[in-house]
Length: 405
Image 1 (cartoon, one colour):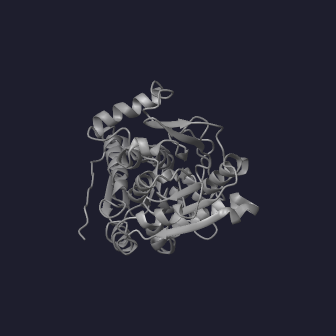
Image 2 (cartoon, rainbow, N blue to C red):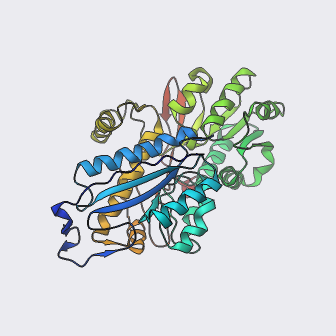
Image 3 (spheres, rainbow, N blue to C red):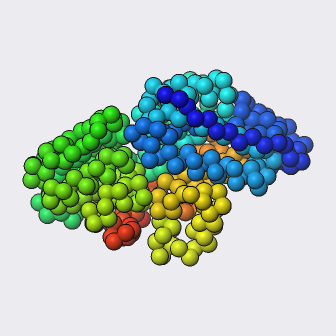
């Protein structure tokens, strides 16, 4: 498999001398930082079974271009190096070693996938290089005692699973629950949280079917799940397989209460390919604004995002939530690096990442903010449920966390 490399390198500005920590302050740098640049590494699936997520890397790339166009961060331009790992953990190990040992990046930023990040987590922590704001909601990214150099970003899958379980128990009479699960840590984390939410009702799960990311389809699994007589379905799948499941459920006339994980909530990548008519009533957990939602479309931050898309990603589909995701996580990384000032060390990057208190990131849902601490590596811990209606997600209920379910 070939890797794609994209870099943005700019020169130094006069502001490099006068940075955020004050004029003539002593500068401290680790690998990946100089007076002129900040070097960030990234790996993502531009090819392979999860290539629908490739637009996240392209969004991040465009974000840093816009930052560089505006003068960089404290006078330094961002050199963003992004490589294709094909959603293959072995390939992730290979390209990340290149980023750390050859390219000598300051940190790894938003590497995508639970199995991919699992494959490099010990290595990154041994190297003491930040593995920051990873693009996966597995609960293992929030364990600073064991892995002080790894931090998540999005709401964790365990919490999301608990919320689905509580809603299902409250709204489905005599539930018989069928689950489709990607057979890796991503799927297992959701199931663990879902079972926790069910509590004494775990026996309501009548069948759990798994699939591998190398499988061509999940159609046979959907048929098996329908044959159990289940009236509720938890769809734990990445976009390609989530869309297949939605289509097959419609084809065979199964009508369960359908819960689908947030990572596959993209209208453009999942629901439109699956068919809007087949997607009606699906429930998911949301934490990002839908820029096409009438209640948000006139908000200043949505207008700013839309104008940014028009300028930097004119071919991008504004109905694909992955573009919103990439923008928000880049905004948080931008703020983290700004707060580092002239102390661009691995240690200070993690210190600043662990120092947010109710920080507002544009395009997060109202009422959802970022908070971290040295003992709390879960930046976003709240979601709001949404139901697919017509051609969009309709939010309902209150903003919830695991504690409030």
